[in-house]
Image (cartoon, rainbow, N blue to C red; front, side):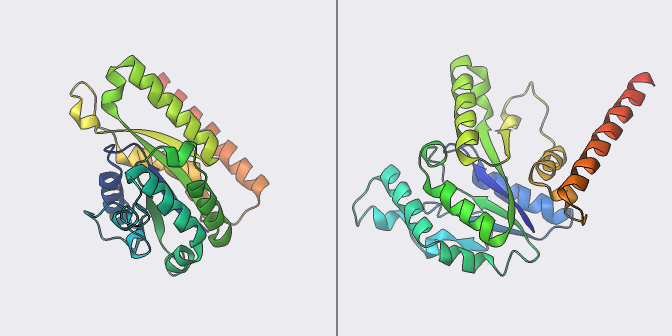
Length: 232
């Protein structure tokens, strides 16, 4: 059983920076991490990726032949990756034995709430490699300051969650640019992600029913701990 994150979000929301920082954090707490770059236009990576889609296809190439624009080119690249999913499976198989996987996706939002290729090849990977994934959708925090943009971001997140059909967590990125907010805790975020994709149960050999019992007990314990702290 392999665990990981599907990192998505609009252009400029900080996906690559997030993958780089999350990789460093997970490494510090003892997890082996592999970053998979699935953005065929990302040619300035701050991290060392274990798998790079540019070895299969590049956006600049499809903009020459078949002469597509940036948006159409990205759709073409995802469709090409879906048709050549065996290439990605072969690249991932040596990693899934002991690595936590971070998938760094392109920023074109249509790929996640309208187009099917990304969803289709992720579904195939989940089945063939027994992956447990959670979607982490980054939203630039400046959208919170404008009601219209904020509602648009919420609708985009809801549409993406319904379309992708995976556990989903929204993360406000670049929060350090808003002085009135406290910085996010990466530790708290990874706790939430681990609950969403099931990593918290990875060391337990139990049935689905037993997992449910464990989850209920954990929830009750957490509630009583909070109650005790309130009484104190």
